[in-house]
Image 1 (cartoon, rainbow over the protein chains, first blue to last red):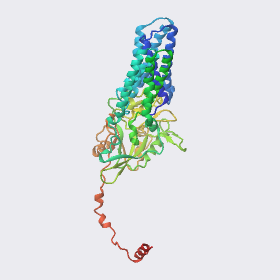
Image 2: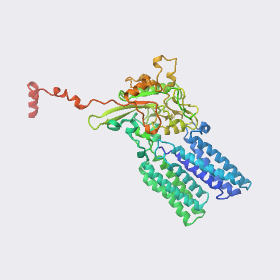
Image 3: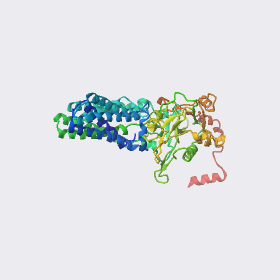
Length: 290
Length: 248
């Protein structure tokens, strides 16, 4: 699948923002006044920035509000609703903390649950697609949630939870890679099953329907970059988990925390880039590609 | 509405005969023509006369080679357009309700004034039947020529999809699959019409007729001995030429 920068930034940034909101919502850390303002500023910048970025790939973004209508069937629509409700609930909770020095604890917990639900809905936009076997497995929501919780804990300054959850997220990502590498073959899709022509002999794509490329191939048959997938997986893992965890274990202060956060975000972007670039859509079969 | 109807009154769709299709791409051209000049946003091209032309098409013809264990390879031309699935995954993923399946005839359509161009329906389709128009930013797909098949301004013989009307080989057939006596239902039953990627669970309405078995090389050999050269040694002018050339 085509790794569109706007979508990579959206999923990583909104995941981190909602992850931070989860921790702020459950009162870890408990912040009040101007201090609270700074935390919520970061969380909202990430979540809202990500959501705005997600509209950049739309063909007609001026009609984006219509995306709220089909929550009964569409995960994309559900994600829209959950995000807006989360931002509103946590927003009220934040206003009380920042301006009234009051913690509305039940509201915070409600917001925390909604924040996780938003991330889950994002993951299901990809996880629901049978056409992309690498995504269509249980690891997708687990990876999205673990990355959001781990990264959110890091940005919220929760050192011990951050270490534990980032390690767990790393394990989930590695599991997703291992099972994902076999997912396409396990689903059993081949050129002969796609065309139904395999009963009489071996099928080969002889001639494409057109001399150039097309929207489908640009969007769904992305092969550039898969070449360096192994190297990028190692780089991603070092930046995402190894470096931040080692730094936090050695000494947890503002400087190491900041370096850990930058490294973690760079790693998360690399891992999310691979999530798209390595995903193979079954339509590629019709073009004799994967 | 992106909730799929539990059943549709009719099941309009196509039968595509892989045995008959000659791969002329006339259906591709007539589809592009009709759907550019009529309903909805035109099917645009980008860099049409440049070095890297791309464009929106609702119907494309692939070509595949089947190499049996024995005998010559077969070339199969494979037209592919929307299959108007009963369990259309493109419809349920749509966040705006722009994609819908009609209760009256089962045609899957896009309401272009509601489409935000997010592209998720194209991702959800296993067949590559939907393409986002790069000029209009809306999703385009086969409408089964909904503006032809019910169009009383057209002569009756033209009230079928442009691709079917234009096919010079008669490889495309249009009809109602919910009627067991329709031409398409009979063809499907007689020729073993198949679904594409049935494991995706989309329940496509369109069916593909598999290529018929071809003659084998052994059959040709019955006449072949009679066609062998009668005279191995040439005489006359040819014989002289042969000898002279040998000596050079």
